Image 1 (cartoon, rainbow, N blue to C red):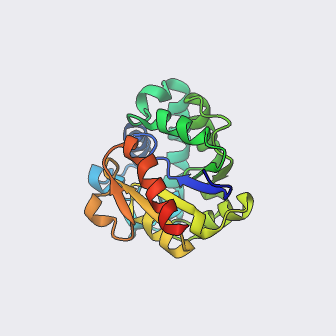
Image 2: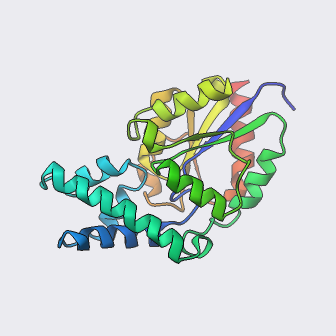
Length: 227
């Protein structure tokens, strides 16, 4: 046991929840509204985690900015409509072991939890409510208020809000954007192998885990190194 506060910050899409069905559906609907062919599945999943504006810029860099803005608006509209028409617990389910590990960490008096996501505040709040995760995350950093990953703004804000030093903070995520963001913020990153980027792409990670159940042990190892 330690009296030093630790902060574990989670990415959401591809890390806590498998939201690819909702993301691919909203992207397809948005492109259809503009009469455009939707990019390939692999291309769409490769930009998950970025802010929507940055994601569209990478997906369709040759389109005019005004049209990309229309795609962003269409995506938001389609995504929120799907929240009303479907059960998020089915279309964006928690990954196996996620809830148990979140509950375990939240019961540790020295551990604080947070999220840093490319989602909007509205989208994150809806997801948290649908999965009954209210009260678990002390700090919630979203795309509405920060530059896109891998800019470190989200993590720096999370540490300011919680008063935790970089040596006692860890980012958990599935993409290179998450791990590069962690490095830019001066904290360690734990990559997960079940998300939308291949483990080989997580070059900035301190380690990569294959199961959620492995996270508590890995965290304790990193805390011991930092002690």
